[in-house]
Length: 428
Ligand SMILES: [Zn+2]
Image (spheres, rainbow, N blue to C red):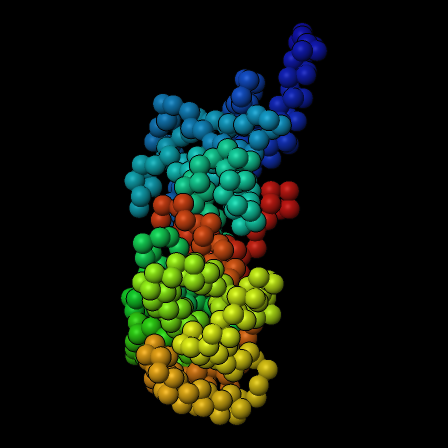
């Protein structure tokens, strides 16, 4: 005669079933639970009989086990209340004909990773929405760990088909860390999505994009918009890349070069004032930087006053300011292409006569790139969206400063601006 289950046993069975449902880990059954002050440890057992090779894309499975690991494996899962949840399991090892003896794969976590997929998805979602301090404090993990997680989630979420049907692309370099660390970012002009990111800003960096794109898809590219560096055009022109595409010089960068030239003139003037021992004038002028570089419609009252003072004193700084503003007006996006052509030519003429060496040089650069600049206007590859997106990417890369690798920074940009749909655990 079998003994009826004790009430205590009943509760235990019900509790593990409830935990099974609560943790929602696919492919395993909860076998033990222990509560400690800081964490809940949940022991689980793999449900399936076949052992799966953990290497991605392998797909080998077998019923034959090589042995069982002598120690438990563990993963951090989603928190329960204020407690961390640690899932442990005694895993078996299999002998894959391609990869050798390995610990079996578990369906709820990536290979060689100490976090469950749900936890990693939550981390990636948070990293794409909020800042470093908030993510680290909320999830109780270090920022470099966030970088590694973002890399894995992005790699899983990216679909090669995002590179299908590209017609007009933009290529940009973005710094992701101090001391000249750069990323190359490729954008689809049609969707505004970032479709590719890679380390570096040289020809080799863009070569890697074209290698992934392949010659068939590259042959369909019609226009590539770039800033005026020398590295990217070399890669675009290579055989098998996109020699047929129209190179467009991003007007946004032309405007930025105008601002940079003005800043050179301003600094020169400031240094003169300082050397002239007129310290109060130098000090007053130092505050003028933002008055000069900001758009006039965004100035504060004080900045507007200091701009008016510069206008009254005239001279090189005021001439440079007018040059920068004229360039900005030409590319404001509200002029028909024919008018832009005329105004740009007149601007180059002005620059040549400006007696400001840096503007003379800029005029020459613009003249050399005239066709590509005008092509960008004609094809409409210079809209405000690009400008807005660049600002977003810069914000994201600033957040990625603490990451250890360029790959992690690149992945964060893809995660935030790429065609990846992030789902939280409860949305699946
Ligand atoms: Zn394998």
